[in-house]
Amino acid sequence: MKHTYRATFNKKPEEIILDIQSLKNGTYQVQGELSDKYWANLCQELELENKGGGEATFTIDVSQPIVRITGEIKTTFERQCVRTLEMFMDSHTHKVDEHMTWKEEMAQEEVLYQEDVALDFGDFIYQQIMLGYDLHPVKDRSHRGGVILSDGYDEMKEDNPFAVLQKLKKS
Image 1 (cartoon, rainbow, N blue to C red):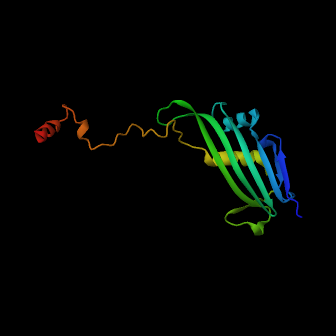
Image 2 (image 1 turned 45 degrees about the horizontal axis):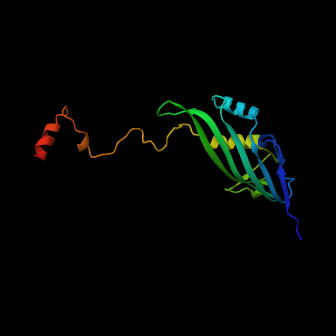
Image 3 (image 1 turned 135 degrees about the horizontal axis):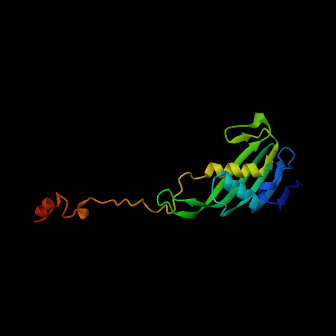
């Protein structure tokens, strides 16, 4: 009978550093809220107010020499809408599905080569947030920016020189 190794880390996600080469085959869990200090540094890096917060949940499946990391990072930043210039709390879920290896010959298009065998989750989380960071935040994505699609006839007014022709056409 083959034993599958399972472990759950009870530290802040950004504090975890794993040596991927020495991990036993199995499943590892990383989950928790990002620390206030990490969040403050992240907000400062992004030139945002230190408001909001984040949490990360990862499952690490190890089948040496391949390591697969799946999960998500949930973030909420205070942002300024590019359309209305209003401040709002922008929540985003960053989905993660990464394959990596410490053996260069095993690296492929979908399997990243991790040169340093130490996987720093603080850096990993930062990179994932930056990859999904919206440079043009919009408060209400369902809002079409004030654009009204119509044929134009319903918007003709008396001060419009063609409004007279429209009236003649209707008579």
